[in-house]
Length: 200
Ligand code: IMP
Image (cartoon, rainbow, N blue to C red; front, top):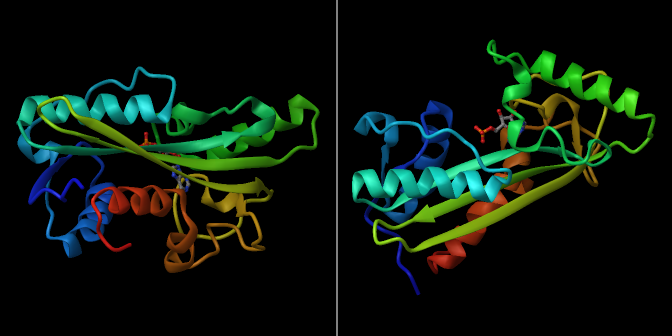
């Protein structure tokens, strides 16, 4: 069984992810160093899958730091849009990172598609890469349906239009604890912890 490493590089330049993932790994005794703090470059996300982009980021950080590296890639897939925005979920918010713009685009494209199918899912891929080339990917998903108008001020990104299966509130209306109990990121983390033989 692989053990959790004493420290790893987190292959992200997003301070929110660094905070969230450091807190999740701290109880395992895993120290986290942010790729940005090591001055590592941020590779361009050129793959067409979450797993591919997560691996690309983790491999780049592991080979340039010589330490194990962990990365996370996530997004929203809308069934009636053939899985869009998918790996470009963040880009739909434009240079201003305005998710009002991104959510309006999803609404517009769904209306244009002429279908009534509002099903969607959030996906998270976590990739772990070792400097010697060993690697593993853990994926989690959260299924749900889209709703308009956007509701709730919690969370981020597409949360205000996403109602998880079996729930009535959008992720934007749920408490962070309630979202964390079912989220795609939490599910991917559970798989990583199981890989390390650590209690979830
Ligand atoms: P990444 O930083 O390339 O992984 O981009 C992920 C993007 O997907 C975010 O900017 C959000 O737009 C979207 N996303 C991922 N997870 C969530 C979530 O839990 N709630 C809302 N939006 C999410």
